[in-house]
Length: 112
Image 1 (tube, rainbow, N blue to C red):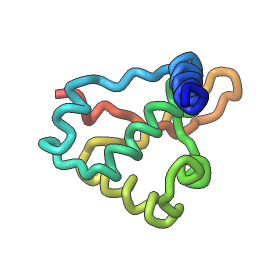
Image 2: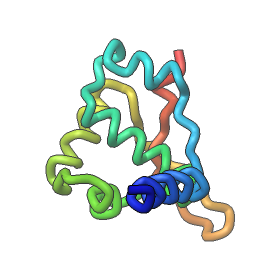
Image 3: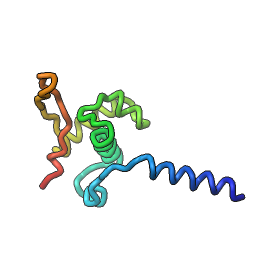
Image 4: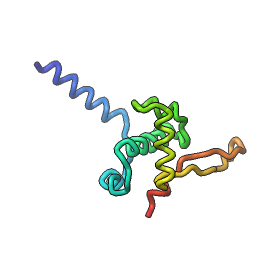
């Protein structure tokens, strides 16, 4: 009986050691009051993770949907809804290395 428990503990430790992301506690606590659905929150969490861990500030729908059970079309609608609710925006930024304007998702809508 100890063997299955040990695998669960090992997996749990592996998960903790693999890295962590920062999600503001108040955002987790009050996202429903902000008018977000669970699915919208999950998309926001993935966008935050991709920014913090992969340094990907404008991930493709394909990339995001690869972490979820949602298809790209539904994901596009969810992101459009987040933009409409002003929880998320797309902003242009200048990349000094490439000399190009690039898009990035901005979370400035969460600031009050």
